[in-house]
Length: 143
Image 1: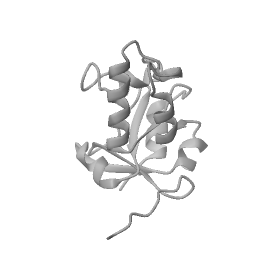
Image 2: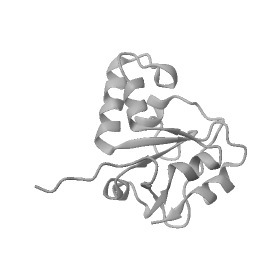
Image 3: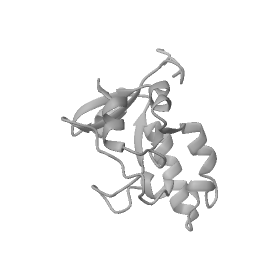
Image 4: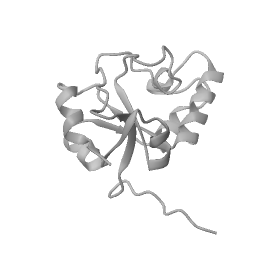
């Protein structure tokens, strides 16, 4: 049996499947609901202050539209972008959700929690970012 090495926040990369030329730019002023973001309400092109990333390259590749990009948590934090770990997301997604994961429908919160588990999802939070265009260029590189 092959054991998978445990991901470490201090040194291992996070991956994002995205366009070939650049990472999609989040909108810091968009609705900050985590459940809305994870459930992909409003479909492709929706505005969100978050970018989803995963510990696993293969999972990020499933969402790729031409390239897989990578970053490190220390790089993200150095550019004043918020980081919400998978464990923190899971702790917020119970019942009707807590904090930015609060949502009127507990079934949708539960479904969002399943997706976070399934895709190994972490979030990069751009709500406090002044210039998301240059920031996304700084924090991501092609994998």
